[in-house]
Image 1 (cartoon, one colour):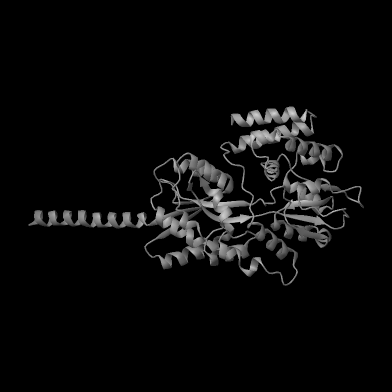
Image 2 (cartoon, one colour; image 1 turned 120 degrees about the horizontal axis):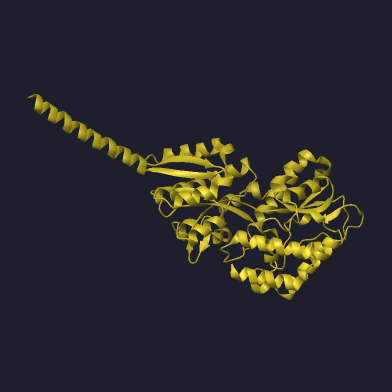
Amino acid sequence: MKKLLLYIFIILVIIFGFLFCTKKSQNSSNEVVFWTLQLGTFDKYINKIIYEFEQNNPDIKIKWIDVPYSEGEKRTLASVLTDNPPDLVNLTPDFSMLLAQKGALFPIKKENLNIYNKGITELLKYNDDYFGIPFYATSAVTLYNKSYKTDIIPSTYTELFNTRLTNNDSGFLTMISVCENDTLLKILNKYNINSPETLTSDKSIKFFQTLKYLYDSNIIPKESVTQSHRDSLEKYMSNQLAFVVTGANFLNMIKENAPSVYQNTVVLPQLTGETGLYDFSLMNFVIPKKAHNKEAALKFALFLTNKENQLEFAKLTSILPVNNEALNDEYFTLNNDNDLQTEARIISAKQLSNPQPPIKNVKNKKELNTLSSNSTQEILINNTDIKETLIKFSDDWKKL
């Protein structure tokens, strides 16, 4: 009898253990691991969205992990090489496409992307497939300090480079951080100078000749070669620049730190080139190919970027929504109080209707940025021959 009870006990332990493990496995299989990049300060907003999603989808649980921005790429790369990556990851398009090129991402069906700005979704396309869901965007504007009198109000870089200050000999026309990241490459792209072949064209040579003239003539500060965009903002706030191209989000910083400059500031559309199109920056979501809960991750991403949630996030921050309905909301179209920051928001939102496509087929973006920086320094600082320097730049670009 005792042996029989022991056998029954053992069988029950095995059965309950199996049921427990099965339940645990089912729970973990329905858990979407969700990574963001440095959005911890918006924890109330994100936790609210997670709660609402889980209420509407009781069979899915969201595990949110916020990763420091500086570690995002490193951690993501390490995770996608394993068999247990996160299910939904917040990344930049450049790094996303690098992972897509390596075959590490799950493709997104085009019909799932119809709710987003079309020009933006094209940035997430590799070959004939889409590998990302747009999250949010920004688009810089041009700030003009009207205490500087000018002969024209420029709308393109060509016009800016030909603008003359008529009442101030101590200030500078503008400051472009030409060696910071891909700043110069983005400007060149607006003139369809976006390949090794076009880099050595007469149009490109003329552009660099103009830049060299502005630099040598102190029309732009010498720090344009060595300092960052943040330094150009400092110069604008200290009344040293007539024009600066920057994010609309920096207006509040100018208002707080340089109220007199803010009072003299006029917001203009971002400077363009011959394409007439506007740059933008984008953050997106990707689903790793080895993710365990791809469909649930996609469902959550679409919920996170619907009209209501995009609008709420935009009002908490200074970002632009990528959802078409949210982008057409009156929050991005009406300025009844003539507020400067509202005007900047409306202008930058409108620019997403005409986005400048980025330079294509660049697999080694960081190396290309370094080539651009080094070549520009050679021309501006070391006075090398412009054509010869661009030919070498072009040859090195081809090797990438």
